[in-house]
Image 1 (tube, helix red, strand yellow):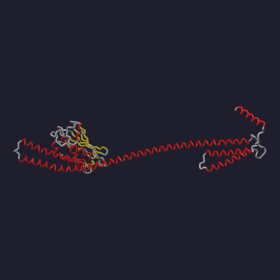
Image 2: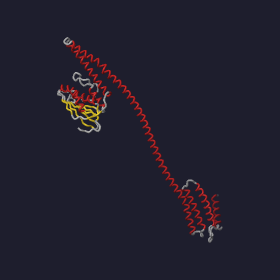
Image 3: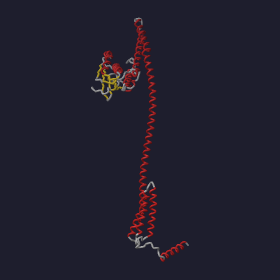
Image 4: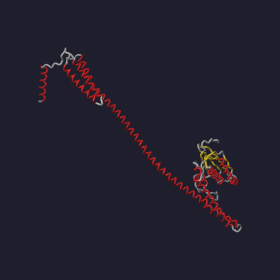
Length: 402
């Protein structure tokens, strides 16, 4: 049924078109040959004016709005040209349709340009977003660094508090040590001197009346008291290295060595020792403590000697801002496993009867050198002598004359 209705309808319309005349739209020879197109032009003009009003009221003018305004304007011009067309296909007709094509192309151009601008803006926004993300990352990293620095500052503050507490403890300990040193130097040594003195008086008073055994006992008492006094004096010297030391100042090692040799003159003569002194420098040192270092090392070299007469050589050479001083001997030497142990207090490698001493001398040497900021070590082989090295700070802007 639907197909039949459609067929009959189309047949009727075709018949009407063939047998009925079409309305007349072109009037050749007239000023306005196409009045219908004039009405269309007026319609375009009204639309153009309305759109122009809306365009001026908008704050933001998009490319599409501009293209639509241009399209309506070109449409108005096309209709005006069409008003003067005299024939169905003449120059006016062709020009009008050409302008219409331009009018139709304007919206397409506006849409294309709008899409291009959108893509451009999208790229700009993407770049800004990436830059913003990078800034956020940078800020986050900076915040993390600030947090780390904050934690470090807190840790440093805590460590400083601990150091301050430790400093107070050390000061208290030093005061107690000084009090002990005072007691040791007076209250402890006085009884020992009395024991030694009265024992010696007793031996002289009853000389010839005591048998050999009694004389031997008296000798043991005097020797023990003397060794105890020596031990106390050495302990006092060790304890005073850090508390009673003088400020470091330019010191001539050559002059200090001359004083040490004068102190050891008797022992040098007794042992037949040969002391060879090289060119010694000026150093930053406590003169008294530096003398203790040289005296302990040279005294040990003469004490721990072999069958040959002792020979001690003192030399020095520059190592950047330090002087490395060497005290070498031809003594009995030291086994490598004891090279660290000998600098510990009361550590002896030999029996007291073989080599006398308190076992404190090298501990004093180490403590003095470390107080000066240097270090001390030994190179030795058993039976081939020893070389003791220690470093001391050089005098600033010292001219090397060696």
